[in-house]
Image (cartoon, rainbow, N blue to C red; front, side):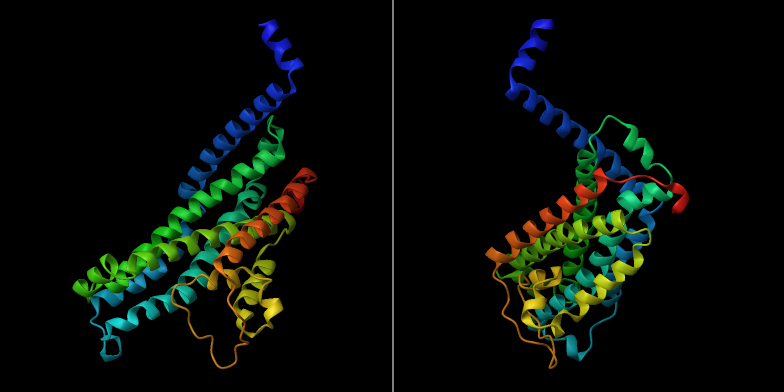
Length: 288
């Protein structure tokens, strides 16, 4: 036993490997605990209600026969792109990620339970990573499912044969995969921003609404300012682009080989800011 300890002490590489192994196990343990809370905790009800919005709407449309304007199957890819952009991406995913990620730390402060994590023998950066990954797992599973189910609910009820050909022999599977990737990237980007909001602000609603407004007016912004937003990079990946209207400021979409790495790099930078914040964070339950 003593010889093993002496070997580890004399070998910095072994000590580093041992530390990384410990941190990874701690991250996995925190993630498992937080995922369970995210899916089955008392705050999960709002997430499920948000997720049911597009599914409920499209289920109702599946029951009611479409009118003349919906009789052209060739318009359905553009229609889903509109539904995805306005309802799923800008509303369900945005506010869903806001609720999930802002409550990762803010919820513990409100419940007066964050000190249990801070008293444990866990580095705060490890705690941050475990909680962020738990939010990613929760949001990706939930909102990717919403995206896939919503697309099927739009296409198949009234045009089963044409939809089968579209998905098996046409562009359907490729478009569905792209929308799923956009959904996951939205969870990555919005999740990091909202976790930082939850760490820095006692009342995160105001900055969340400010970010929501910024994302919605993105089409009116000059090209340079457009790129200071998550929605610009996500819209650049949409397989069926939509017109932003007569008042939109035209800007070239950012190519995927720039959009995806760019969004990931910004996310890493935001998480570094979050790590810096949590290292200096002090708990004052009385002020919340």
